[in-house]
Image (cartoon, rainbow, N blue to C red; front, side, top):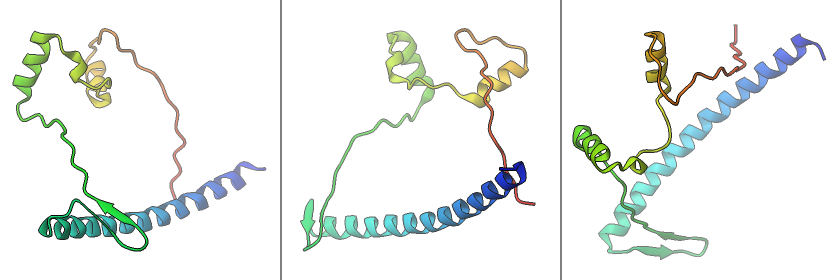
Length: 121
């Protein structure tokens, strides 16, 4: 297979992915709208669970953290040595900016990655 053939095959696949993602985005929007309608109707009727002939629907609740004051939160983490409250992920843009300024970040090193970029002309 010639490189030009691979480029054309990759381009066509990219176009199909773009079209499919547009459809997926529309379906996702419709799903969110219907979920909101279900949630509203079920709450109005005091239901946590309901069903019809083909499926069941339930409302699940969860508690998730929401940081409203990062200064307080970070001070707590440092004081209590509670680093488990952070996810193990560093900010790539922040690291790149510091490296550009010549700073060393202890425990972090740059790793090169390669990606193929295809653009339609």
